[in-house]
Length: 91
Image 1 (tube, helix red, strand yellow):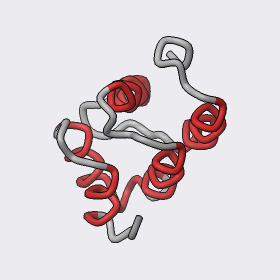
Image 2 (tube, one colour):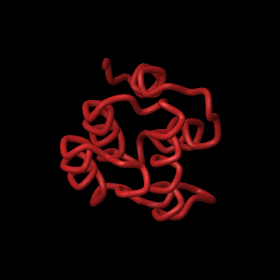
Image 3 (cartoon, one colour):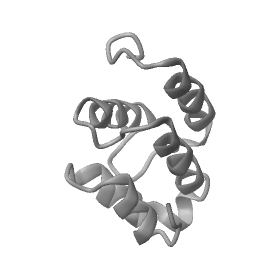
């Protein structure tokens, strides 16, 4: 997928850092979450490598942030900044 979405090296390194903390959320498997994240790169919801860093902080505490992560995954218009604000993490 990294080649398909032509990720720059900075995106790739941040994604490698994020991937181990991705856990299944309700109806989404880890693989489906990864796919959704890559689609958001294509739609420019994820606009920088820093967005992956923010996601890492949010996914690191999946249990506490499960509702908001699920909302993010099901709402294609929710930005990373919105997700960060809703989880109490200031971007």
